[in-house]
Length: 102
Image (cartoon, rainbow, N blue to C red):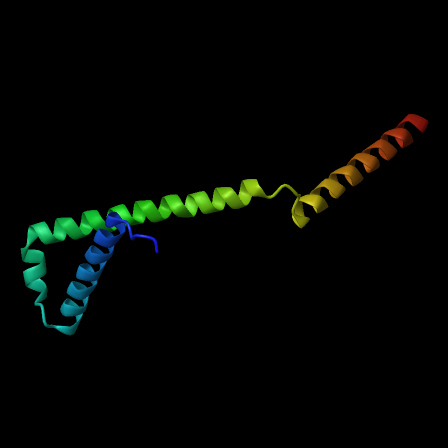
């Protein structure tokens, strides 16, 4: 059985504490003025949410870049654009031949 890393446990505990605080505020057990009165709690929560948002953005960016760079084939749209380019080149050559004949 694999051991759960300590940072993951700490993040889980912090998320649970913030969730319990949020539920307490929404249900009315904890007055809202107490939360904003404690500046340290407010700053800690703000910094923690910001760090989680940055980590999430990094993972989303990694996922998107992996999807973009891992596909070695052209998409359907790109194939159609390549066909259209070759068609335009053929038409251009035909027009040039017609202009030379005149």
